[in-house]
Amino acid sequence: MALRALPPASGTLLALMCVSFVLETLASGASSRDTLVGFGASFRPYFIHGQYWRLVMAMFLHLSQRTWR
Figure 1 (cartoon, helix red, strand yellow):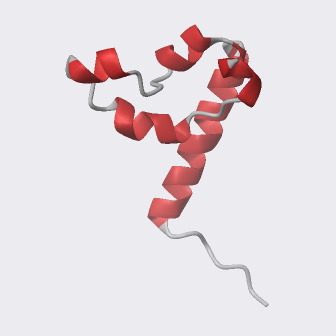
Figure 2 (spheres, rainbow, N blue to C red):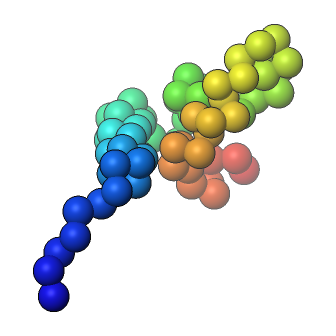
């Protein structure tokens, strides 16, 4: 069985997720709400004021259930 290359879109998304995970982890990870908001977490007041990119960026964030307690 030969290994196939990832389609360009899949490879790009995978790379973006890996990069965002590493950067987020270096910046204190999901243990800080400020870090998550800084990395683009979906936060209604910011979204209402025109930061629509947060809808897409929130898909790349990695968070822990402990963060929001």
